[in-house]
Image (cartoon, rainbow, N blue to C red):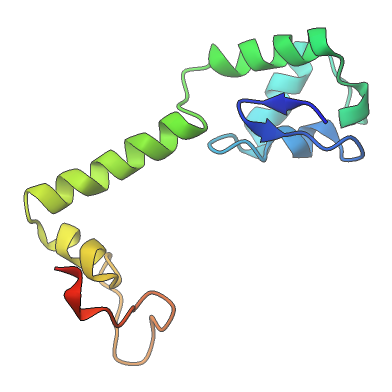
Amino acid sequence: MPFIIGTPIPDNKILVQSVSHIYGIGLAESEILCQKAGFGDDARGIHLTPEKSKLLESLVDNTDLLVGADLRRFQNDKIRRLYAIATYRGLRHKKGLPVRGQRTHTNAKKRVHFNINVI
């Protein structure tokens, strides 16, 4: 099972779907990358040779997009910045409450964590 940017590519799954499992790459971008690498629509992970795997990984690295751990780090840094400057959104993130103005009286049961010692 080959890995591209730390994401496993299953042998039996269609390659376009597998590449879209990389964090930050959607289905449309995955199709574009697979076409640039020379794969057809029905290519599967088993057709991925080490050379083609390196080519696909270099194509992913050369895109303008942040992908994988870099994207996660960027998003977490944005949230930590909101914590640091003590904005309303930062406090809502820290408390585990909905951030974008949703009601909490009857909804947001999954988002609300009853941890009082967070702040």
